[in-house]
Length: 351
Image (cartoon, rainbow, N blue to C red; front, side, top):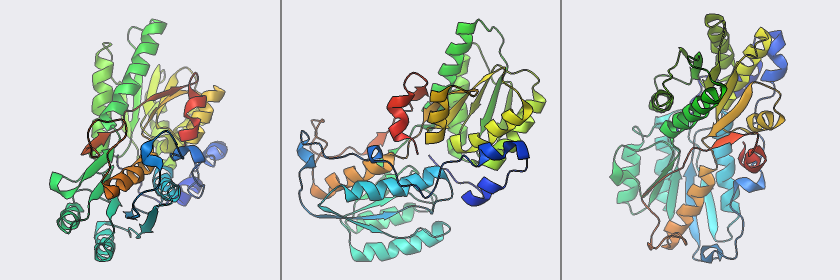
């Protein structure tokens, strides 16, 4: 992220909306309690030589508590993927409320000497020292999503492509508007938390892609990755722009609130693109009965992949389709565009 760090609890988000007309949409948020569906993990593949049981591996794991659908799916996916391997022992430690609490909890994990640690830090910079300490202790660290600044602090980094999300959204909107013959479109953007690098990267990618079509953002608002903040900024955007051609909303969870604002304002002259790839968003896109016509992925399935790769690292194996004998140092997942035409294919990855 990525870094989905909402500033309010998930439950408060669900019930914090004020507009009665928006109530039905806001309560349609993705669930934190739901287990990931089977397809968000990689099942047995007898054609893959790495699927066979091998050396027993203990994987330590830590991620912030769920206060957002994406974060909830990260831990659920990690647990489920570890459970798919008979040779993996999954040892989770609580991340606490902040980086300091997570660092203290992880110190106990080092003492237990797991074979590999998979870590989604509260903050990559603040947990960098822990990564260095674990690596120096001979425990490979898999950094999940929130990068450590020091390459010596991790054995593997796996994350999504925030800049690529913006590029994918920009190209979808640019192509659609060109196809409609819109010469000077009014384009709105509802970002996440502006102080986060990931938000800045997403907006930079969006701006760059739109520029290739000769387009630019007309009005930009920054929400907080929450449904209620999405609703508030959606209302502000709609009031500022009496006529809109397209909107990119960075996050599908906050998009619940944006769609509520759009419904309450009875506006439908534009189309919208979402971000991340929640199950609810994919279902809406497939149903084709709202302004939401596409979303660009930043999937929490990366946690499943992180566990699979940690297992290979612990067993001293490489990825079966690569020539190299060891797992790569860095993996950046592509941001894919989900539309009505391919929604059924991606629904299994929704969270």
